Image 1 (tube, rainbow, N blue to C red):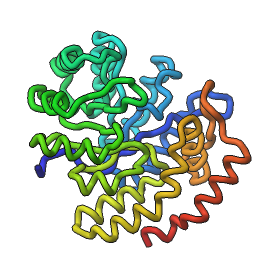
Image 2: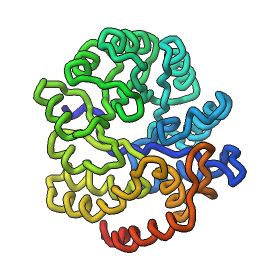
Image 3: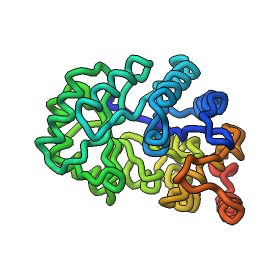
Length: 298
């Protein structure tokens, strides 16, 4: 169990200029910002990274810039799933060649355990780094059963982790542990159920929450047996966890928070994504004022 994949890993947004161009300087500053907050790793080109809106050259630049800026201080993982198995293999090998330490891979768009297993088997046979199963039915339309997840972990060398985002997530954590699976389990869903997932046997968090130092504090407190402290931090952050994870505008909110925190220059989201507006800024300011986040981990 001591060798399981653990900790808090941030899904990074891809920063753009106000004109929508890839902002390499902000990508560098965001990477440095997150490292300074104590995260255990970052993930680029995830659902939050707007990967489908990036050209291949831009996707490559995101990986190489983040890896170069991280300088080995933390691992950089990259999203590399695809609708076609051959394309997923190609994207995975490319990401590794550019320096990614591992791969976040969503299942193919076919609801068949046999097809899903073969998809991951073919990728596993070609890559050398960690494979993180991305279990997010709301985005993929595909469900990964606990039995299939356990089989993938047991039989494929590089499958080490599941980013578990199928609600009720805590119940699925228990289902995997009740099967005896030792797969690393990290939560998602904006961190909204992080504390409950830890109680059920999860090993960390992998999400885009824009105050990742709070997730780090929750994880560290819980790991040290300070469960009341972990719960206190979690429940004080809950209003922002809830507000920030809204479908449709969550990315705009997260980018705006990072902009306000000085990590990126612009909150621009590429079309057809929603942009931040004055009313959203007002609501966000109210939530932040209520949470008093500067005092949460004091």
